[in-house]
Length: 308
Image (cartoon, rainbow, N blue to C red; front, side, top):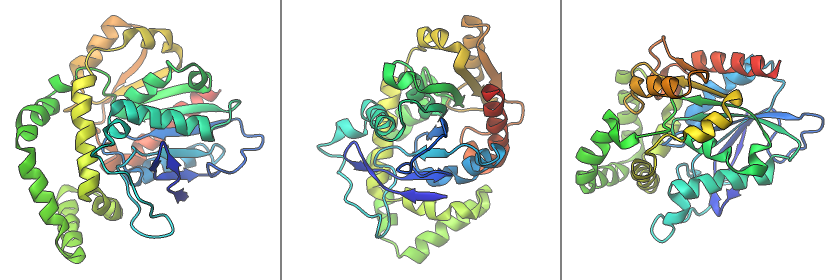
């Protein structure tokens, strides 16, 4: 695995790769796997999932993951670079800005003759669907895999209601809390997150990513994007789904606070022949925390199937 923080759309962005690095020549390799994270968009949470995908593909295809702009800041040199603040740069970190961030990355690092197996998790699936509308990007996309996709009516979901009606009105209180938390000594913050992971069953190898997640400037951008999602992600784009249904696979959760099961049934009623599957294994929306390897095996098998 390789990692760095190249500047994309004016924002240092955490990139992780398995196989070829983004700046290496792909040579005769004409396919890659690219994953767009959900929100929060820290690639560190996707390491187990994507390393499993890479192994399932017999290490034949490069696997890349791009985080959301501003959601992951490097802790130390040689990667640490100044990240633009949220205030005054809102257009970089809202939903439209995040989409443009992915467009710039693909145009810069994916050769025009290389096909992309595009994985989108949560809001990453929404961005992947939007990328299918961009002609020069769409031409490079071989197949899309939308995992627990937030493609519609986010504010009307159970979690959307909690975010917009309960947490957001009291956001100043939460801001005070995580800013106070950031003032604690590192060993105390580490111990608190470790105990939370222990109680919640989250693997301890995500501890470093959890510490980065609690950076106040990162949380501000995560929340800013979340509120913009609630406002912008409303009606399902059935036209784009129908137009591209032969190269889209959707995987819905059976207990998803962001994507109710009814959304899956509504989709199948509107587009009966679309390749959409309802999870029967009780994976959570944030599958990367507890079901990363299992989901990685499934996605690896799908990619092998659609490559055949």
